[in-house]
Image (cartoon, rainbow, N blue to C red; front, side, top):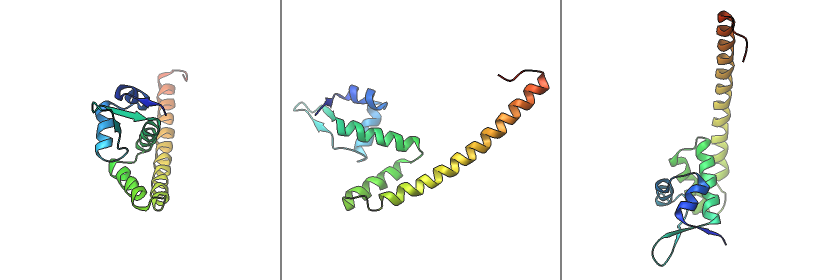
Length: 123
């Protein structure tokens, strides 16, 4: 099993060391193994799990959503309730994508309008 020093884990996950420690403190992953000197040592599993957390955060899940997700995984030991939580968020995310698509179309229309008004060609 490959292990990573905190700086390496930070680089691999794209999170700061403070954020890694914060997520660990909240129980979103871990516990992280420590050396005899007390320094954290992250495993491939830790780094992969944090990668999933980053993806879920990028998809708009809040910290409280992630805590509920972890609670459901810990309480049931299975995916009971997890699928429902993720499906709810997926539905909300599709709604946000639809809104953003409309906004993008409006912006594109306004850009085209003002370029035409200014006599500029489309870039």
